[in-house]
Length: 339
Image (cartoon, rainbow, N blue to C red; front, side):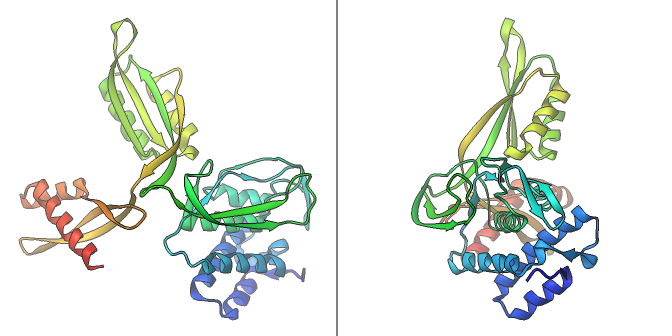
């Protein structure tokens, strides 16, 4: 049916079906993603939004079916890895007339997602708002993007074929497998630049600015430059989506004339989670955040209490920071062993 309906009416339909709780939660999350995109495009509040393509029953069925299929795999703790998405090109005929690809609603979803996308390779719409919302939601909640296939041992491959003739295989493929390492595989960029005409104070300021602006790590190495001048090699690890912004920040603060970009295809990392641990000091409770690193099998590799929180407690209580960190880490270990 192509009858227009409201966003709230569509939510009522989903909630009345009796879907499994986790499936319903994810379906509603995807619909919210689509609804917010349509609301931004039309400049209309969600509760006043009348839907066209989004409200069609086949679009809703696509969402429910995709979420059902994902959870039917029964892979708790698994990750969804998504390579760059080809959105197509040209124009698409919609209820609002002929629109450029990607359609405005699709682009609004991409704007608010972590997905990496590109145009082409055909002059057809390859990514619809429904497809963009499903992919963006699952990747954000259950995984991450990656520039290419990671190192995996594949076990099952699934295919879905479209009916539109595009001049090339109109096929969506998903691969199920296990990462070939005990650690998680991450994809990051490395920025580098050499400077020999800035002070240590400026470099220190830059480190804080970059970390506050999304850098994953910043290191500065003393170096001897040409003509024997003393300088610094600045290295910044960041996600690809932050590369251009951070490179501009480096140039603006240091006056460097160029920043080298070194894509790192694979970075092996421990999975990390934070725990709030309560410790007692002189009968008074204090909360200390503790970072726990694990491999893909859940084996604990490292437990580290947050230094800054322990430093503040040390200032207040007069105890040594290292003793407070040790106490918090031991308590975290006991909590983990009891899980």
